Length: 287
Image (cartoon, rainbow, N blue to C red; front, side):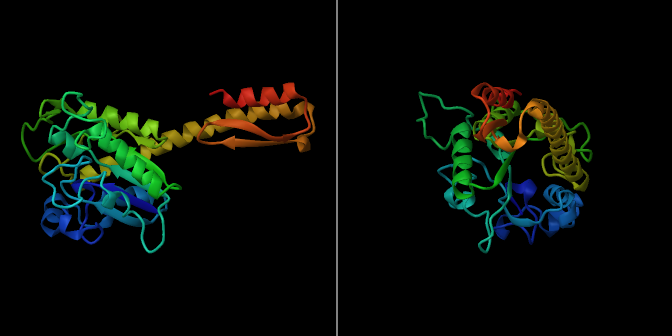
């Protein structure tokens, strides 16, 4: 089961909650050519993985950061947004977080400035992003979290359109790098659209057309495929090393546990000499 936490590019009428904060309504569906669930980037990704949508909690105009003018908890790090990704007692297996574009467009400070910001200031992007991930992990401890960097767009309908990498004096790269940093800190999967995706087409400079949605979806699927391929290769190499080590002793004498997050083996039970156990543990820690 998949849930989505996003902004306008991830909304779709009839699927997004709340419905009044949807960008892809009937008017924008026609303008963009994004007419059905299968046209959205997230719909295509979920279908390619034989999954099902649980909740799409996407809010048009949403930032990760809190702002004093907000009348609702539309920001990504709010208690409401980070606790509304389950439904009818069913919890998501994967949570896809695609937020940050509006923080960049608002020129929100990426890291705290001691002159103006406290260490827990949720008007700062890095602080708010960490707060968001912490809340999601607390509310959904068994879910895998995918953090998306920000994709770069084009607009074939507008002659001489040039993507504005800087907004409010801040480069989009700063936000992407912070997303990568936060995702790594909390052991989340990084979906690096900034470096992976081709320019996705839009009808207004930012909101994807049907073609643009396909570009984003393809980048996500390719990223997942490449990482799974590398992980499979790693498992194969480690398995071959383990088989080689096991040749000279009774396999029934040892139980080995593999920790996927730490990418290491540990001995649960063994009648082998200590030096052999040490060889297993040392081998398991190598990348």
